[in-house]
Length: 202
Image (spheres, rainbow, N blue to C red):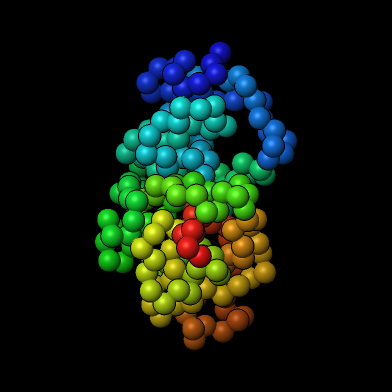
């Protein structure tokens, strides 16, 4: 039994005993669970946290050096679920200036409501969107690389983020970046993707 991560070992976090039914439902007690290892299930919104959460959570982040890779399926209200993977070890960042020129700094958290959209959060360096990658319409077609922590990287120059009329609240419409010359009938079926935070200035 635990109430905070301090009640657990250093390689564990405190996971709620109660699954939330809605966004407002919380739990005051949990049990100690080890940080995610390769092949474990994870939540994208907190799986890539750079430090162990001190508060009660609904899923542990990955062990340092591992990454929560979204599998395009969503568990409402918890967000996108995924699998812990060793293949992607993205560098942590607080600004795109800490990333490579072809990367932006994407938040490690996915907001659950509009009030969380404008918080300042740390992130990890993610390459700009390529053909077939997920994107957010609101940021996908930016003409310059954003320097702040964002929800999703814009497309690589020469690609565009074409809306598919599917929305993730509160993030907005999401889709795949595609070549401007691609015919509508050739577009890849939409999959949900790993999303994070947009700059507070937007």
